[in-house]
Image (cartoon, rainbow, N blue to C red; front, top):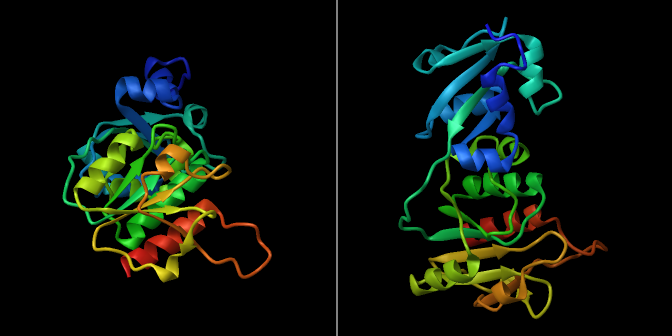
Length: 245
């Protein structure tokens, strides 16, 4: 059992809280029984399971290296207020470009909870992929991972330059929608094409102008009450389900 926070392995796990170290090792840390079971059931690779002393080991854990640690050590590496006593080191996954029909494009989303929720909703709505612009929060941020509730492991996600990617999608036959309040039409007035890509912009400033110019249509969701606007992840959910229907 590992009992010291000065242990080399513990130091390595703790470093995975930083984006720089995640990118350097091409691994990230997940926590909780649900997420560990979700990644086990997917085609992602678990490098190691970390189990707190006294916590029952899941049956599937025998397939992986398991490190047992003391409670203080687990609390040291944990990012949650009430740790469940199980975590895993997971290898990052690179997806190949496949045949997609509905794609969610996210431009400079900064809130980890919003990003995780949008990935989860894209998975639930049956979208084929999520494309993250360069200025969007890291998809392996622990708050993003938790907010996806495991959908991170079920839908292809790409991080790339949108000014390059969007023209490629258009060449592949995609119609590109942008969620914007100005110079836009109600989404209910526009019929989605079989291949539609939806752009959602930054929570405060919206879609960057140079990205917005690449869209074929700007759409908005009618506001019937006195609210100024909708949360970005809520707007994304409404529009994705409309496109999918």
